[in-house]
Length: 102
Image (cartoon, rainbow, N blue to C red; front, side, top):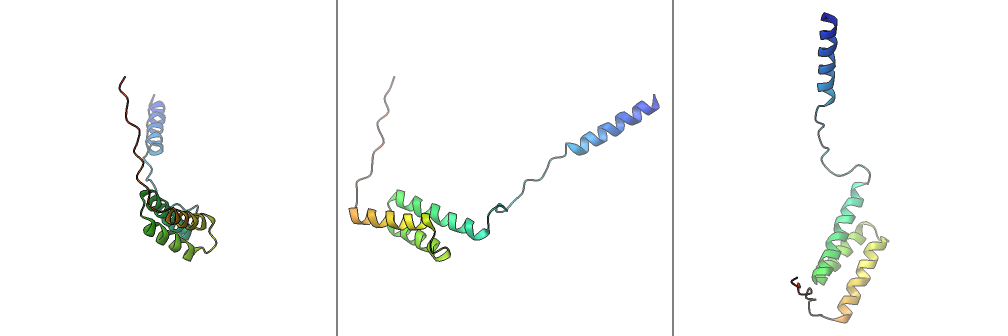
């Protein structure tokens, strides 16, 4: 009986150790080099600014990305997009469709 209690106690202790909460990692992911993460942030900033219509901010973000990676295809595409949007001129904002009631 005493041996059984020892095994149960040992199992409970090992189980408690195994169920310990793990600490979530913080900081940037280790799978990509830090400079790539900086470029990705600048690209997101550029495309967000282009979508919001602030084309000068978009162009600046894409140029900053190209300073870090001169031949980056997404940054080059972003610059072409901004140039095309500037060429077209200002457009009225698109209104979302009106909600229909059932």
